[in-house]
Image 1 (cartoon, rainbow, N blue to C red):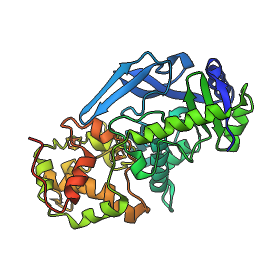
Image 2: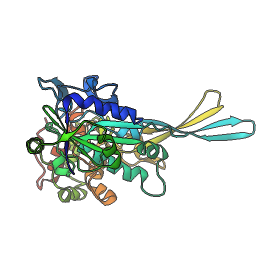
Image 3: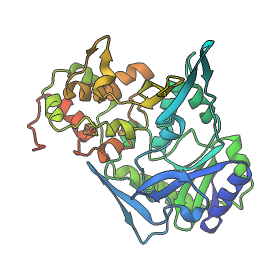
Image 4: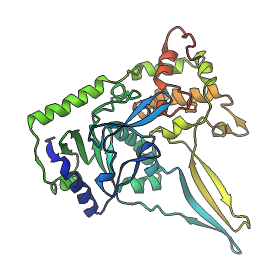
Amino acid sequence: MTRSFLASGDLHLLHQTLVQAGFEVIGPRVKDDAILFAPLNHVDELPWGWQEQADAGSYRLQHTAGRRAFAWNTGPQGLKPWLFQPEQVLWRADNTEEGLCFRAVAPKPKRLAFIGLRGCDLAALNIQDQHFMAGPYADRFYRAQREQLLIVAVNCARSADTCFCVSTGDGPEARSGFDLLLDELDDGYLLQSGSDRGAAIAAQLPLKKATGKQVTEANALLAGASRQQRIMPSEAELAQLVDRLDHPHWQQVAERCLACGNCTSVCPTCFCSKQDTEGDIRNRQAEQVQRWDSCFSEQHSYITGKVVRPEIRHRYRQWLVHKLATWQQQFGRSGCVGCGRCIAWCPVAIDLVEEARALLADKPPEDDHG
Ligand code: SF4
Ligand code: SF4
């Protein structure tokens, strides 16, 4: 793909072109001391100069002297809540004199253009597409919103200490799934299109031909981001977790794990949900509500009168073995895209990479977590 150059001072024209094409623009903003995707009224609202310091159990934003809008890597959420909403009414029922009358709830998708998604976000989107849209029973809410998305992705020019997308093959370069892709340089953006829609947007921008020096600089930033990363065991190694179900390390993790579900909530590939039927006090109307659930919740494994994963060690084992090993049988790849969110947002600093390494070690390690 050929790359063009958009000067920093013209970034607002990309925003303007997306709005004129009928999209609501969603982009990264500093909110509640984190980077969150939210409606972006103007590029001035981007997190200029902000980057995160993330580590196990820790996420802090830091303002730097740099004037880059995309110097951060991840916030607590990517696309997931926009497509698979944390709470979704599926249908309603009225209790009438003629009997129960059921009404479907229609999806209300919006034309959304996302700016700032990363390679790991796009890989997670691809996994969620497989789950929600492949096969005969597609999720109509997910599908309706998915069909209205336009994606302007950004290559990562640095990695947080929690990132390991090189190991999973999902970053730091976004390779597919975008309409436009940016590399941020000091004075502007290398831009390439990944679809006809992206090319049509790009054609309306005051682009110049990218110079060899600019391409070399962008490639050097990507290479630097790759070098900064930690290493996760390979998929072939992770597949062996199914043979470690009796490893004593599960209990060591369980003694620290709060079963809070933060990790599954921030994970961009987790898709578990539950349904609740909620009636009004007069028993005239009821709603069927789908909500995010977590394999860390005791009730999530309640089957015909029995909780089949009664202890936290069973639930942590379910999360990790499914995400990293049996997911490979189900979807042809690991369920982890190396974003590191579950590591940063775990309140007790349980570290997926460290736990996987410990579980795969031939000899069970000493408990070094205190
Ligand atoms: S691993 Fe961490 S984030 Fe996940 S449930 Fe346990 S304590 Fe919560
Ligand atoms: S398991 Fe953790 S690192 Fe992997 S995709 Fe989910 S949140 Fe990201």
